[in-house]
Image (cartoon, rainbow, N blue to C red):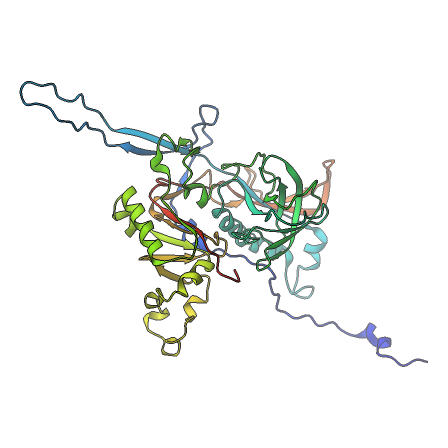
Length: 439
């Protein structure tokens, strides 16, 4: 008879490590530091004028009024006079769902510590809110059109089955999440080329995204978007974001108010012309904002930057004296370190042009944005929570296409939040900055 270890494996016990590494990123820096601090305003579903006026109105004072003119003091007619002019923007709620479906077998087989290192049902419910926060963080760095990634526009077209997209360098795949449900649209946002694909791999360095599913006639310039958008892609298709408001575009509208009629909505922008971030650029942008509003606006600004521009400014040596050491004390062991420990974290901050900047890996790599957080608001029908029936039920049995009950459990998170700023012109950004090598 043969002698081999395989003859006794039937009696062996399997040992499973109790640790469970998460092979995906759930970054929520901007959500915690900006979004969660915005005042929330509860609105209704009210609209008027075929959707032109939505549930939340934001008035602005465009002109102070009054006519300055010379008049003779010898019985001359005085100027006719004028009055203030007021305009308004409007915004409505924006629904987003994050849905889960768990088979009964998976729930039963992981219900106790004797069966599994993780209770899949409990772990999924507990992680739902964190996952939603990650998606909210990504949507903040959009223009409200649902575009999360865009092909670079050069080279070969991806395959129609399980395509691998090489993405443009400003964002790459950083607004996508592993396992995310997405659609694929043409670059002009008119044609939907693929529905219900899943993100199976992302490479933030090579700037590629691999999708599972089918795309009809893919091109190297396609858009990867939030799933189930009605199209054509435009601002307002889903939750609005930073780049909808911090924009130097002089045409179109912002929340229903014409940017050509009210040019003060246009955000001051310093175009760096494909050059590196410099102190002079920051001073110029500050001056632009002061000329558009006044100097009090600068004191209320915070900056938002990708770590690429933090690196670009840090290597100039100009910010080294402004670095805040953690704990309020200079750390001697790091005093000569060109990369102190507090700059190694995404949650770290840096000072540039007198403005404190927070870091987000989801921000545009080639720009820096300044906003006044006091002017930013959110509107919602109700706070983020489980999708519920009127009786409070939020766990539902699965259903087959014919309507029959399946052996599964379904639940969904629902957000109706939308994001707005009362004054898009009281902000600023630098664009067209050089992206440092390696980013």
